[in-house]
Structure formats: C-alpha cells, structure tokens
Length: 195
Image (cartoon, rainbow, N blue to C red; front, top):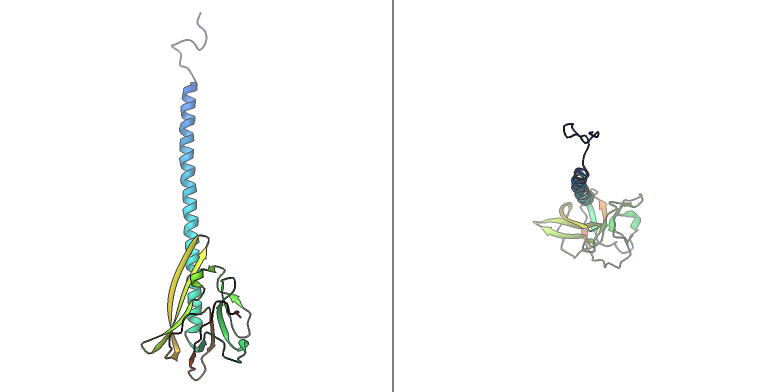
C-alpha cells in the first residue's frame, strides 16, 4: 500500500522548511539594503536642500543690501549727533543676530530668518578703490550645523573718497538727492544698542 504523498513517482507540491528559511533570509537582506539606501538618499537630499536654502538666503540678503546702498547719497555707520533716526533708512544686525532693514516711514523687516554667525555680526565695511567708494558686505549665515559665507563688494555711485574705518553691524543711509553727500564713518561696538 502506497500512501498518498509518499509515492516517489508523483510530483510533490510546496517548499521545504529550509527553502522557506533561506528565501526569508534573502528577502530580509534585500529589504535592509533597500531601506538603508533609501534613508541615506533622504538624508543627503535634506542636507542638499538645507545648503541650497542657506546659499539662497545669503545671496538674497547681499542683493537687497547692494540694491539699497548702491545709489545712496548718504551713508554712515553711526547716526549723526542730534539726528532723528526716523529720517534715515537703516540696515542692521539685531540682538538675535538677524539681518534687518527699516526704511523711512515703514516697519522693520527681517531680510532673512537665518541667524548670522559671530563672524558675521559686523558685516559692513567701506573702502576706497580707484577713487570710488566700495561697501564690502561679509555675511556668514548658519542653519543647524551648516555655515555659508559670502562677500560682496558694492560700488557706491554717489559717495566718493571713503576712508576705511573698521566694520559695523549698522548702516544708516538716505537716497541720493540732487547733490552728492559726504560719507560719515564711525565705528560702533557690538554692545551699542541697535535701532
């Protein structure tokens, strides 16, 4: 008497326990490798996006400063004695290390929500180059563990003959009128209250 399933001439159906264990192990290894590649890709993408955002923030800040200052008729690191601060545009680094701008008659607006690093807390300096005045803006913005630094020189079209006078976290300026104003430079300490 031959039992059912024991006949060697009949094909048998199903998998043995060893075959199932080996196939499950292979699926587990493939899944682990796939997930590690996926998580690595997500991490790299996130870091790349963070770096791109930081670079874009830095570039936007530099462009705004440059476009605001390029045709200024008056520029100073300090408010003139007895002057009314509300009559001047100002770009400054606030106590939270955020670069902000306030135009005459308008509220203060942050140029970015990204924090400047300690080396970027005195971003403005003015030099003379070939008879023209040049504003150098040096920004170092940080986000998490990332830091991005950029420097931009802006030729001051209406201000001539500037002498280097250190660096400052504040720029007071006015738009150019019919005449060319002189450049007034003074150095502010980091502890000077900002507008």
